[in-house]
Image 1 (cartoon, rainbow, N blue to C red):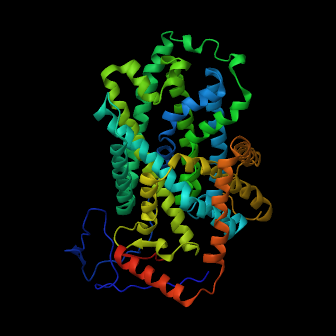
Image 2: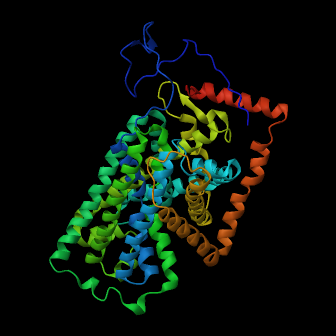
Image 3: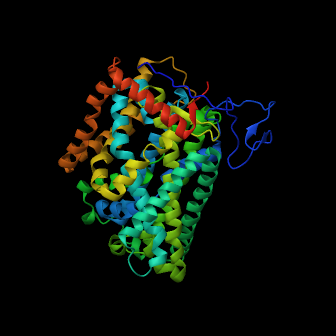
Length: 502
């Protein structure tokens, strides 16, 4: 679709960006000196290997590992089988991550799932994925993670009483606003804080794992006796156990959303993915072993917050610190996800599938400010008014469907574009097994919950008429074009953003 760039004059000529929270040494009172060098207004390559690892680990480890153990145990039927499910989910997630490593090194554009589906199957399928993300999946996902943050951050204050729902929602809104503000102000500081939060998550893992393993080596093994009782394993529940486990591992794909900002992506993307997945798999397996060392299967199933129950049984008064660490974990997941997802909207706007202002960069901060804040209103609306968990039920299976489609695109492009440079190439069996697993989970959703799954499909299919109305039709009414230009221009002035320089 043809784009119309709206130019906005600036009183002092082309703006010169400065570092976050610092004045440029060549500036005086914010006005560049005559000899100040001009710097491109663009997203720089600021994601190093360490920052890449922190993005992946920081977004994977959110509330999932503190919620999912209950779902995995319940549906796997035994302690031993639940540990097998955790390891298997880690291996499957690694397969998906390796497939995305190949995609990220041969398609060096940000945007993740959206970009890969666009490259393999064209703009219509990519827009349907984008549409489902914008209207439901991402706002609901942010709201759930932020709610977990609000609940855990307030729990030490209200102990031993319950936390009022109004207080949780207010704390949630404040937490999400903080993450939004941070991502709007500085890429560098967003990455630095993400590294700090990632180390905080690994610290809380150490607080749980080390005492658990210590007790295990001292002989506390009674909860592992008869771990694989055959009569307690229900094979029909295993797909649901995998669903819970894969939810906890979700997030391995977020570095691919910021490929254009990664230093030396051919090396950094595969290396960051492999290191991150190895760390997460080991931590997840050991933390579950620690849980079972201290708690019986019955106690774990009765707990609403497994990590908190573990801390109360083992650490006494120190257990009050665990909810704070869990809250930091949720904030890190929210921060990293927001950093990555904003790049998908940025790329989609650049491709002509979202309003032009979303592909613009702040003149001083060098952040994609409009793409960062675009989901803020709808997320708060869902948080205070919507049925978040029903919406997630509608949409969770679509995440795996479209990830499966993106990985099938990798296989498809192996045959249709054999000459495409592939600095990192995986055996084709890896994307084949992973995509089959994704589609099996989607099929099982259709079988086990046809109503919610059907509603989710219906919501996503509204993207097809939206595509033909807003994207495919090139000749739009003059009033619509004038309104669009006016809105773009106004937002460009208010947000102080300009098109990226190339």
